[in-house]
Image (cartoon, rainbow, N blue to C red):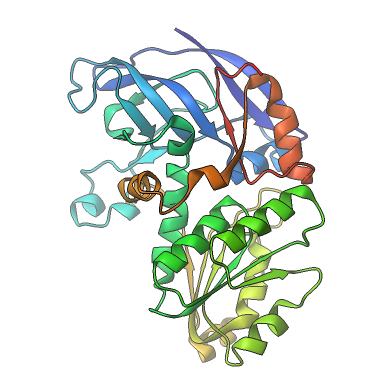
Amino acid sequence: MISNSLFGKKYLDIQQRQVDVGLCDEDHVVVKVHACGVCGTDINFVRDWSDDPMPLGHEIAAEVIEVGKNVSSVKVGDRVIVEDCTMCGICVDCKSGNAQYCRNMYNMENQPGMGQYMSVRYNCLNKFDNMDYVAASLTEPLAVSLTAVLNADIPLGGSVIVLGPGPIGLMAARLAKLRGAGFVAITGLSATCPREEARFRLAKDFGCDLIIETDKLNIEDAIKTRFPNGIDRAIVTSPPQSIYDALKVIRFGGLITFLGLHFGGKNVINVDVNDLIFRKITLRPTFAEPAVNFPVAIKLLENGLVDAKKIVTHTFGFDKTISIMQAVIDGSEPIIKAVMIPDKTA
């Protein structure tokens, strides 16, 4: 079958291509995509990526429509989440209980999640039942946030700062509270545009104790007024240069986990190693590949512990892709999370 699928690069050069989709082998499954979220990585691609167009979309909720002969774990009609990178299960790291270090992963085989159909290997799928496809599409980014929060190893009742109020940061703040943090702050640019206003409103709703508008208030002053010795944990979801702010407010022996990327040349920072050593600061990168924590993320969404309806503010079809991504970039719409629905026509 033919799938209309989206690829993109710098300057919002978004291309709709027709891709032939079918069972690659007897271990594959064909799914119909019902919802695919817009990730910060997609925005990085269409804003900053200058090489060949990249496949767009990896936050996928879909329906099984065809299965290979060897597949017994799913059947036609099942509702599934597609993992973008799946552990192999047989390498030394996987068999040693360290699947997060697997380097023999199954992937999406250059197929965009922002398309009508995909062919994926059966073990890349997670079944779900008790939510709609739009809510289910939050599974992948929620799993990313959860991995960051678990990597932060938050002490019970501890203090946390989340840098970056995008969907990943907002969900990380919510999860930090669920994980037992006594105080959570979140940072972002001033709420002078509809996007930031909406995100800060949700930050309050998600239980953030302090919102720091970084171009109005000095982060170090805001934190050290409350915590003179610094904060226990920092979770950096914004671009790499935000690590500088985390280093200013982290306490002696504190931990900073970071996952914010940049594809426009600002991915390199200078770090004072002496400072890290003398203050016993841990820098811990978070990269949620292969996919981990999907089953827990599904439960959190199904049980309403993370409310998808508060996060997903906009849905769109193929015809609105450029305008939605432009609005995410410039902040002109109150978008917290946008989700593509391939069949949506208005």
